[in-house]
Length: 520
Image (tube, rainbow, N blue to C red; front, side):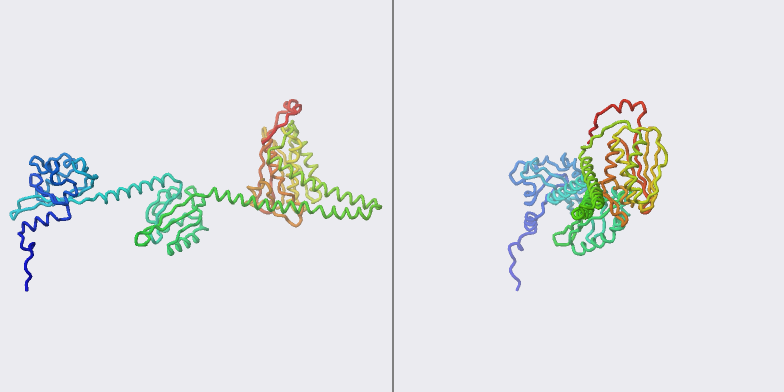
């Protein structure tokens, strides 16, 4: 049985079309071929906030209003699109921002795009033009916000000294990174995919790749340190952190990370660790050096206790005690000396001093150790009458320390030479030996406090490692320089002190001066 027709089914096509037009969810505006608005639906009213009865609505529908001649629409190129629709073409109208309030409506400005369709009769004549509007304000706002964030991110990257990068979900470099290219000198083709590993230090590549691959597989934070080759060829330590960016479905959309240059911090930390290590070694060495004399002093004291009537044994015991006490006093004096130097408390009693007098006094001080170790010693060259302005006692200490250092670090029966030469207004004092030499890693730090080469079985009295530090400070206080050279372990060492000379006629003026030079 056929059900009875509903009232809607019985309505005429015109009524049904009118209901469909009015209730359509899309804003529809019907234009006459001459550009006049003929009718609009409810969605149009809601979009423009121009309702029946408003003054603007009356204007829109007035006979003298023609959208094809509207200045705003002409300026936006919309009038031209509508003219094409009037000519029979379906046209998409570009987005334009309509200020609803300026039009006389209410509510915020909106971004709107439209599609214009010509309505034709059976003969192809244009009857009307149907405009269907789409409010794209939310999309435009989202795109604008995204562009703002991207611009903010770009400016942040440019403002920071960090290297910023983005990778695909599977860990490959996809997008270009100007900061990476500027730092490493790699082109985009060289560093994309996994080419960035080529810029890492060879010792860091395998471990970094394994860690990165594991983090990508486990979707965990990538955090590590590695060295990157800078565009000038130097390797710099970087702190690296990469995070996965997850979408609403929990899938990784991309990875984003940054590299921060921490080379100076790492170097400073390594320096502090090295200083701590040397300090610990020094304290152990100091305890050893101070303890060594105690055994002979204690033994000599026992001899004195039970051999008071034996003058010869008393004399020998006294000599032992005196020698060991002098050794301990020398150690303590060195410690006090280095403390005064590092705190800037040394005062120089300056006068014009003959270089040869300095050398003679220094050799006299060092000769006992040179002879005790059986070294062949020679003086090469002559400073003539060259004089320097300085503290004679301290300059003798410099040369004596260099000679003693050479004697300690040269195996028994070695060869030590003190060479002298004048070069214009400067004189050089050079101490050469054929001893154990200096490792290339130790050479830059040989004048640092508490630095000492490895002890050998025949050099148990190695000192405290402060002699060369005193040499550097004292020479600097005199305006001179000291340098160390070595061909490597077993190749001997050369220490060169360079001092400015003074003219002989300055001797009378300087020698009478008792002014002390405070240094800091």
